[in-house]
Length: 131
Image (tube, rainbow, N blue to C red):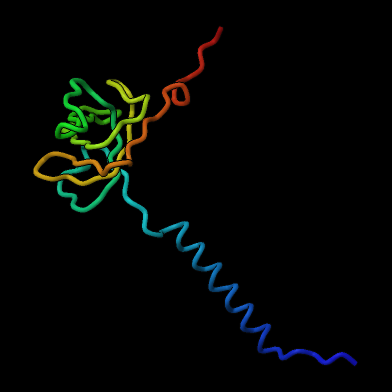
């Protein structure tokens, strides 16, 4: 007859599996995300947030010479915030494009964290034209 292993091993293995499952559910629902805000929602916020909005003119400066300065406006609104970003921008970056970047509000200017800016491709977010 084959000797059976201790049931304690099975209990320990199932307990570890259950703890991992609970951890994964927690992380996927509530774990450490950075809040995504529009310019109109920035007032009174501190710490790092993700800012999403539409680039409005003018875009000034260069990343090597003090940073790129531009203004973001609510996608569906009029509130704006000046932005300072000291890194290269995506190829699709230009006035009128929707962008998202991480950073924090300092003295009324949103200072973007280098390497966090992304642009939203306009073709993915517009209705298809009937031909």
